[in-house]
Amino acid sequence: MDLADVREQFVKLSGRYDLSSADFQTDSGADFYIQSGQRWLDRRFYTRKTMGRLFDSVAADAWYLEFQSCRAIKAVWINDDEERWQLRRYDYDIIRRNYSGLRSATDSEAPKYYTPIWIRTTEATDIDDQGAFFNRIKTTDDGSYNAILFMPPTDGAYTIEVIGHFDSNALSINADTSFWSVTAPETLLKAALYQLEVFYRNTEGAKDWKNAILEEGYDIEKDIIEQESSDEYIRE
Image (tube, rainbow, N blue to C red; front, side, top):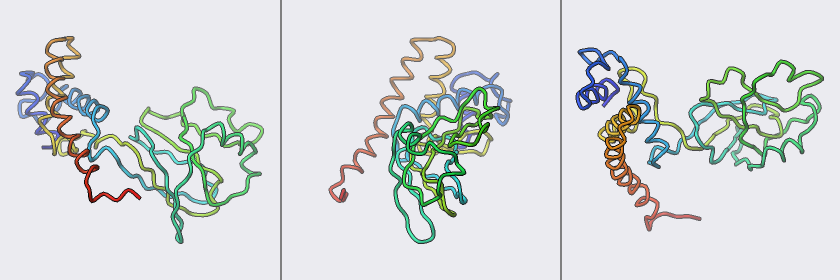
């Protein structure tokens, strides 16, 4: 099911025909509950689409990478045109202590370490005053960005691979699909209906929907457990 299909079923099941156009092709509030429901499912359950991989290229003298929709960073790999290796994670304060000099005075090499970093600041006017340290901020961050800082700064072009827990594909336009809308549309609809009850403070109704969702979600998670416990799985 795409977003338009989910919207139609949500409106029919909820009886809230005021939340879309008569032909269900235009949103009038239904998508808010559908999107809320999907975000809740992403945070609640571990599925075969929870883990994702993001690839991005960096040029020489780079020391950070920003990306969106990643809830948890699990590992970072890097490669040039000759080899590939995993970056070792260090605490942010340790990296700052070991690379406390100015950017202009730090030698560029193949990166070896990384740390997840906060990129939000409330005031950055003077961040580069009296020289530029290895700071990274994003004053226009809308809340969807995550980032890593890696060291040493790159001495050439590299490709960085970030492995982590990523949000499902956004359901923004009618043709959009996601793991939940395609693989478990019934669960997504129940999550949207659950959010509707929550926002209207119907405690009993919300509890009933939540119980139904948890039962289905645990069944979905069982597939991952079954796969990971396979006798054919080589762990070394």
